[in-house]
Image (cartoon, rainbow, N blue to C red; front, side, top):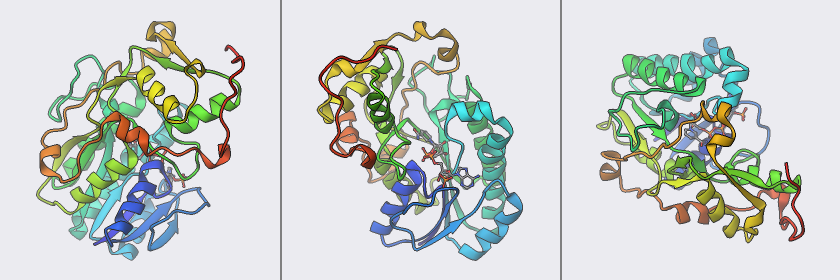
Length: 311
Ligand SMILES: NC(=O)c1ccc[n+]([C@@H]2O[C@H](COP(=O)([O-])OP(=O)(O)OC[C@H]3O[C@@H](n4cnc5c(N)ncnc54)[C@H](OP(=O)(O)O)[C@@H]3O)[C@@H](O)[C@H]2O)c1
């Protein structure tokens, strides 16, 4: 299969590129600003995907059987800072890709997020109505609607918080832990905020299977098997890297009422029907953590056993 992969330099996109190569697919990967290596691509294209006028040409040249769309402004804080840029990337771009996919008879797999939910009615099933608390969640919810209006045969996957090793070594959860520890600070983690994490590699395996299943259309959920608090997720990550628990700081959401109001409390997801349809198995938390490697920037480094600096 020939795949056009947007966001090839991202946490998930890079995992998709690796998985596609393992499966023997040809992948044309679009990167934005990243200049470092991306393994697994047959062809690499640099493009600003905010320029929708150039999109048709990119798709035409790539001649894909499938468009795997992972590019996004994926950081909720960045969406609040630059809402118009985020709207273009997170809503207008997938809507335009959906139109192009239909016009060319190409399979489209689009990434949405658990953040379309408000976190008060977990566990969520794919048919539950979105009720986003933040702009990122609103944009993802709008993207789902716009994509499926234009391309009813597309697959839209709401993913959970992802663990993994990003190309930059700075993007993912444990990579941010290392940066915080290096600054001499403890990592603050909510004891009462729940996520059902999976690894980017595991999600990539599911997405590549889905790409080859045009019989599966509409909205799907993918996550790990275990809902856990951010504190518990952090404890497993610290233990995996042999870092003492004192480098983690348990906090309640009530301590940060302003930001907590914009962050859903419990985003546990039900994975049916996708977990019954695919050969890829959802991972336990320990399986997702087991695949984490230290960011290259911090190779061989661990926080010292001495005192930590308080915020
Ligand atoms: N990470 C998570 O925990 C998570 C959870 C649920 C859903 N998701 C969704 O999964 C998808 C992938 O997320 P991710 O974590 O892999 O994102 P990410 O690591 O932040 O990567 C974003 C990708 O989008 C590209 N991009 C951004 N703006 C661009 C532009 N103007 N032109 C071209 N490329 C641009 C980036 O390219 P450069 O870096 O080269 O600029 C990068 O490849 C997104 O749709 C996200 O919303 C992520």
